[in-house]
Image 1: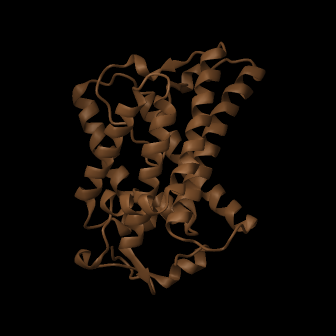
Image 2: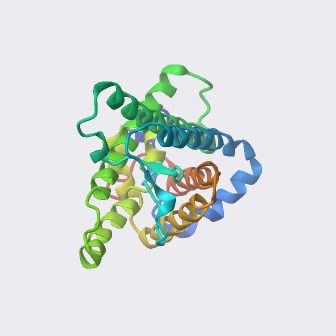
Length: 271
């Protein structure tokens, strides 16, 4: 029922009457997960891979921050479906590394993003019932577009995270545009899976999320808090948060996108 190419997006138009849209958010995602438990599989596999990468980061000599050491309440939301890793590498940890260690560190981060991109692509495509079988060129295009999108999100997140302790006032000011971006670009992962490039997906998401911003903000906060809480579970936090929050968020994004759009020509400026 959805497009798999960029030119197919021209057969969509934004829904302008919220009352006519099917249940969105968690209300629409839970029934889909109940009907199709296989939607949990991609992010469960991704969670196991991310947990293994946590162990490898702890094992190697490159400086690593253990996220569980921070006891403050947090909202762990990356802008795309994923979990909360037990370990993270800051940009500063890569400075002045010898080439073999640099390649190793970058390789771990690249593998994490690639696995999460694959899980997101498969889960959203299955939720939206994109029925082109296993056409490898099309799946490769979707995966690469999704990967490009989350690399962009991840880069911005690392830059923001590198600011460190910026103070309460500045931190509150910084949070306003950050959460506004999370809301406006909430549907971008779903749009890249249906055929848009990363930049086009961001534009379409910003247009499609008009009028439902407060509801999406509530979802961002809820998913962020859930990811943070599950990430605190000893030993299995990474796998658990990825499997549950990653799957639910991916299905929710697809469900909201499905509810906001109909078959037909795009209504410019609507959404």
